[in-house]
Image (cartoon, rainbow over all chains, first blue to last red; front, side, top):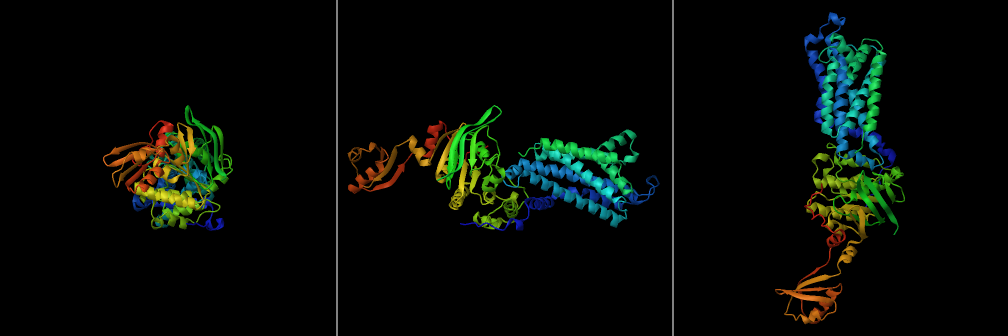
Length: 257
Length: 310
């Protein structure tokens, strides 16, 4: 019974690369989270089929409701992945002793965390691209006009939401609890993102509150970029502040076991 | 033989609870070393300090000449670990897990060969959630060996397995040792320690109460042997009671029960042979590791396979 040593390290790729690919595979294998991630895209397709959403509106400067909804659905997509999938998976890894097991290997648990973030970021990128493509090719929604501003806003929004997701993973005792907290948090955040009630038509108090929430700030920044303006610094700062505050809190609170 | 692991006066508390009070032992190269004790004795905390997962409050640990706290990067390359109750993502397939884990190491084992050796080849594409308890355990052993470690620490290896799977696992561990891997086995099953371990440390209430071979530990508590047999022809008791090594002879029906010291068996068999008596259904009872355990700790160990581990 002899087991020889195999391939050189170079042929095997880095541990982080392998972990990231593995995490991406695992994400696509969970049917429930796949369906969940697709919800914003499905909403886009449904809205696009309803004439109410695709008629130009005077009060929207001639844009359609769908034009206004695409940035909201992109923010929705970011929130869905960051607040439900990410914390559930990470809390589950801790609960099942996977992170602890990784502590006993040269790869270490921090790499699993990094791989999980990278995999989620990749999924976010795919979902945003799909939403943009379906909106453009399917329903003639124009591309974002301030591309750099759009990318910056989307990245900051992803950072803010994933920091909140990490914080949930750190604070929740179990993967079930993490999932529940994420879901409970998601709906009020979606409300302030204008999914149910467009932000411009909210009473001013609600509107101000909305701009202070991560999704409200994200939607404002994305919409600005869409219409060709550089996003308002206040919104970008709000997103950055969420990313830093929750990121630091998560790092302090997070336990490998 | 040089010591591969040395633990000296290890002490570890969690708040007011003392998990490990004072434990010392040395593991030699190439042996299967058992850490045996009742639940909550401090076995797992001890090996977690060896693995570098916990920092001892007092005492010294050296593993392959490394400090588990300071030299983590090097230690993880050379020490394979199987943790109690550690799982994998539900959707991860057997081959993927092995390939992934072997990518972590500088000089990994050939994971395909490992998969064959552990009888998992036909499960290569099976997801973790769909494996049986025994298969999960074998995968866990395979992952502990993925980096071709010099030392493997296996914690509660066979808890929750059925008797057949347990015996298969024991054979496997002997196979691993025969490849030159030093093995530290944490267990609360006497039978497992007796069958597999070259030496054991008996841990009770955070202290190592004895470190020796299972046979020597058993001898320590009882030097008496009990010999039972059915003589082929009627037998005069004096024939046996006259032997200096025999202390008593009693009869149960037509069965003769002889008690005596270590040499009693050879003395009895030679007397019987000289008188052309055949000892039918001969049985020799010796003190077991379990007797030693009870004598040394004053308590009964887990009854065996059916005893649940919390």
